[in-house]
Image 1 (cartoon, one colour):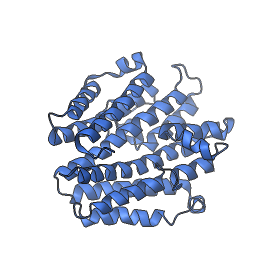
Image 2: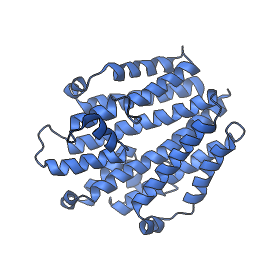
Image 3: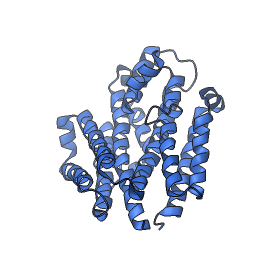
Image 4: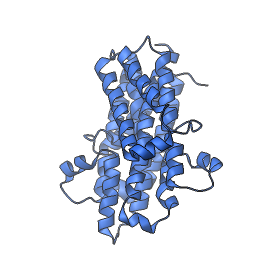
Length: 312
């Protein structure tokens, strides 16, 4: 397969997943801002984590004097000058899909093109009128539709593997960042007093990752930070966990290039997730583990680009 085609398909999938992830980040911040305990906090304390998770704080602060809910949502959702906004991600996914219209089923292009035609007509006032949560759900629905169309219609050749690879590299990065920042905010130490507030806040985090019912089915217990960390890091039956993502990443790379350095790196990461234990991770520090994971995931992405894709 040509590097240009592989590059377009890989980034097409990453941008679709990124749009969904941005919606999930905004969703959890919005949910937490609606909790009664949030009245004790400033708007900045509620919405700053969203910018940190997305890695967009420096860019945001260049154009904004203060952090408010409306400004952050507008910036991360619809700002065309923000290259990682939902608007920009869908636009770039559509451009990558358009470049490969001969390599993907028409249903895939029509799916992402329809999402682009809808979002380019949206304005912040529309989000206020219809409700932010409805908008976040719309983004997640379009992303799910695109993934389902990909799996259901795309020929399962190298192009398919690159598209799936992009999805799970992006998803792993987001899950790690979201858990790292929110865990630090909600569980800075082992002794928490206000357990009721914690329950609703942890519930908001789990719901933002579509993990609330999965948690209930697996643990059948009150929400505990250690269990949340285990679910989102090590439980491979949950599709947004780091372990599940690297099951898929390693599988795709074993097919695409079993002897390449990127495959070795993915295998190393997969083994760490497969054989690690929650108590070992928390003993060393979850923040340390997740920071290392994010750095290794970034390094793997760079190695994939070096081995397969167009490198600028």
